[in-house]
Each structure stands twice: as C-alpha cells, then as structure tokens.
Image (tube, rainbow, N blue to C red):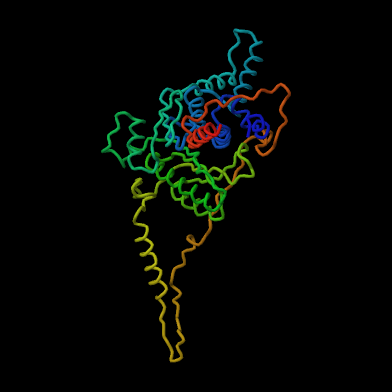
Amino acid sequence: MGKSSKDKRDAYYRLAKEQGWRARSAFKLLQLDEEFDLFANVTRVVDLCAAPGSWSQVLSRVLIKGEKFGRTAWQDKEARFRQQMLGILPQDEQKTEADKTIDEQQEERKPREDVKIVSIDLQPISPLAGITTLRADITHPATVPLLLSALDPDFDPKMAGTQASHPVDLVLSDGAPDVTGLHDLDIYVQSQLLFAALNLALCVLKPGGKFVAKIFRGKNVDVLYAQLKIFFEKVIVAKPRSSRASSVEAFIVCINFQPPDGFRASLEEPLGVGGRLDEMLKEREAQKTDTEMQGAAAISEQGVVEMEVYDDVPEDKERNTRWIAPFIACGDLSAFDSDASYQLPEDHVSLDPVQPPIAPPYKRAIEMRAALSGSQR
C-alpha cells in the first residue's frame, strides 16, 4: 500500500507524521492519559515492547520536556487567554486569586529533572531525549536487575525482592504479536505476552503504582480481568478513539498496585506460581474430591448409589461469581474516527515516516526479494 493511500485511509497515521510522532499509537497513550491522568505524580516509568518508540516519545515530551497535549494544552491556552484579558488592568493592581492559581499550576507543570524512563524491546530503538533503551527479553530473569540498574546506577542486586527494589510508578506495554488472522490463536499469544509484561511489572512496581497494557478481547477475557484484580484496586478496560472500533484491541488500565500479603514476584516463578502449577492443580483436585465425599454413601444390591449430602458444606460464592471490568471509551468525540476515510486536500504532500524501523523483521525478506529480482534481469 502506498503512502498516499494510507494517508487517506487513516487520519491518525497522517497526523502522527505531521506532528512528529514515530507511530499513530502515540495518540492512544495521550487519550488514555487524558482519561485517567496516568502521568500524575509519576517520575519513574518503564515502557515494555517499546519499539519503534512512540509511547517512549510521548513520555519524553510530556514528562521530561514538559510539553502539553489534548485537554491539558487546551486548559493552558485558556489560562493564557485569561491572563491576556487581565493584562489590560492597571499594572499596580494586585493579582486576583485566579491569577495566583494559574501561576501555581504553571509552576507545578514545569519539567521534572528527576524523571527516569527505561524502554525495553528485543528490537533496537532509535535514541530519544532522556530515555534509557535496553535491548532485552522481558521474560528472562536477568532483565529485572538490568532494569533496576538502569533506573538506579547504585542498585545492589542483594536488595532484590525488598521494598527498595520497587521504584517504578508506571509500567506500560503496547506490545502485540504478529497476528495470523486466527483470532483464537492471536488472543492466546497476546494474553501470554501480557502475562510476561505483568510479571515484570509486579517485580518493579511500588505500592500504588499503575500498569497499562494492550489486550485482545475474547470470550474468556474476563478471566484475565479477575487475575489482574488480585493485584490492583481498579481494573478498567479502555478503548481510545484512535484505536479502530473494528479491532479487538483494547487497553487494560490497572490502578493502585496492592500485592497480596506474602506475595513475592519473580520472573522465575510467573505470578508467584511458575512450575508449581501442576502440583497446585493436583492438590485442588484432591481437596475437591474430599469435599464431595463428605456425604455418607451406600451401595444397594441393585448397584444404586445413595448419597446423603451434609448441609454444612460451605459454598464458595465468590469463586463462582463472574466479575466484569468496566469499559470506558477515551478521547474527544469530535476527534477523527480511526475507521473512517477522509478526503485529502488538493495541496496535500505525503510525508515520510518520522523514524523508520532500524531492523524490521521483514528486512531480510526485502533483501532476498531484491536479490532475486536482480538475478532475473
């Protein structure tokens, strides 16, 4: 597909190039922040599966450079307009309470110098201002000490597992597998990628932290919501307006990290279970069998089993209750529709991508095709 046809089909693809974003996915994070205020009181962030770096670019421009987008930019514009209107008053007149409030807000929104942002991906990421990039596997146990060392150069590996080794306020993951078109398989692979991101987040998030990740909604996605609810106070499914409505893609927003008592996260034992899963399932089946045999059974001469069930067998209503996470649409309704095609103006010039991939997976295929076409001439 050519650039001009893609520009016409997807308005956010065109806007991303015009506004200097590396990918259209930057608008998804901006709309999520506009709805949930993700960046409030955040100084340490980890961006997983970060390539080509559009979400890291948002973090750099918002948290480090102090730029404002969306609703925040509109509020600042209104504040400046009010200041200009109040500027017609005499110079010796004292500031009103509204002016003082505006000044205080502007002071709070100055770029913070103590911000630490680390981006991780298996693919190389082009450098970004103030961002530490790591080429690592988020499922490998050695990644956590590497990440903590990038956040704190004085990090002591012996402190792993303690409160001091949980310095992260926000963990993001916009990773997704190469889809095959087989929806059940794609949803399963995406859920495994999300669990890998979640397990790393559990290792570094501090209490009260936030976790945001991409999900594919399927028929059993409520099981995933229930698992996340174990670790976070609020679990919300969000659909940004820049995400196509025709896609099963959504984002899970987890707020206020509250690990269970005695829980210890480790990449070697995902979600605190790891290789003990089979043993735990066997114990559960044994307990289930013992509960079922609490009644008195008798076999008659005809081979009929008579079972007397006691009334004091407890019923676990919470385990049988299905919990569904709330669903929220993010983004201004007047914004572009990601599923619509918009007519381009006559003087439109198609722009090149801001940052082409450094080492895309398809690079080898392109080289082989070029070599093959050259040999056939």
